Length: 394
Image (cartoon, rainbow, N blue to C red; front, side, top):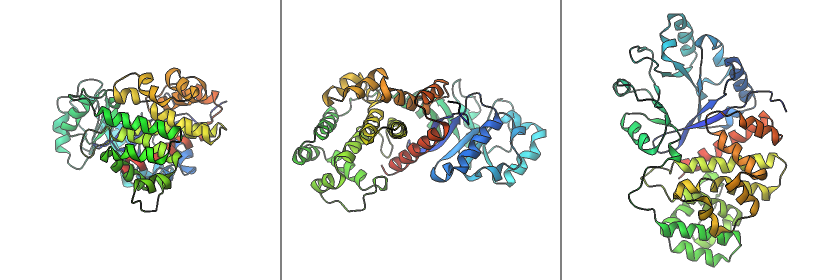
């Protein structure tokens, strides 16, 4: 299969609460005109209209390649251009930048010379792969109206340092490298959740489920909160655990419990656990990919569960096989999680690549699954939209 348009990966950009606020598309070595063509195709398909509440941060290699009718081709309100500061200082580009700004185009400036500052910059983006420049904190503190982005944040400790520097948006691999904890998380809560998942999987009696919920007020509260969220389209007011379980149904209950594994581990007031949006994205994307491959609803449920469980080793700081052993999962799920084998394993690997820096293997995996660029982009849009809705309501 030859893709009509380049395949991009999408790195999530989060706010201080760890809600996803923007996406960083990475098109690999695609030319600027190919990127714009792909974004136009996405616009024509309604991709941006359906992806409410999120912006795309589009890197621009050369300002001269930005078409003057950019705002007619693409929805300016849904995009930020990422511009190198050296290019912005080039007088040859000033006319085009003024025109783009008059058309409502916004941008974030990436400083690439500590001694050169463009006075047209309002929002800054610093990669912290190397040390943060000495003047970064001063520049950020002087730009009160801007939204400043730190990228390539390697771990949770660095994340806290970037917050202290005044950044509001954050991108990087920090969810996968959590901060060392002084006290181990509540093992009993984790045990109850895993036991609940096991009970649901074997279709246990409702009274057994209720008994475990009653042992954990926080777990019950989180369940009611999820049940009441618009993300799951439950309009009926719920007044008891029995009613909630009956109204939800076992299939949705299983999904909520999978989400709660991450929600219940958040250790900062008002903040999501950084792994939760990532696991939820994997789950939703995998389900969509499996269904688009022609598999049935049961396979879709297995795909969702596989994606959701794929980060439990990071969440709990222990081997995945050990975490999953009480659940007695189907062989195809375990093969996917532990060895990336089978349909589920390949779809999991696609999901792993889909929110990281671009890797050419993602195109090979999509080809193997006979999924074209249209199917992939639709699945990505659907997954991020669902994640965004769920995480805003937690």
